[in-house]
Length: 124
Image (cartoon, rainbow, N blue to C red):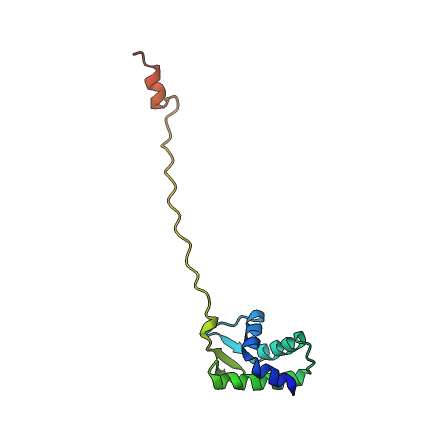
């Protein structure tokens, strides 16, 4: 089966494709159906015809290979923790604190002119 050989030989390309289609980050969980449908779509985009059951078998072999390489750490029979440091989630820094806005001037009582007008209106 040439599709299986292609997927196993190009596992980094397949991982990149899966990451582009599903949320896959270092130390996150990843599920078998995501791998299965991802491989099905990946092979279709490569113009390689594959049936649903054949894609499932390819996905099982792909997962076995990633387990042996330590990229997928089994959690249960259909879930794996991704152990791929290159897929770390980007660190998001909190926005810089905005400088405090200057305080508004105190309101003047009605009928009182600003100090500059009072000084100008006094005779010299």
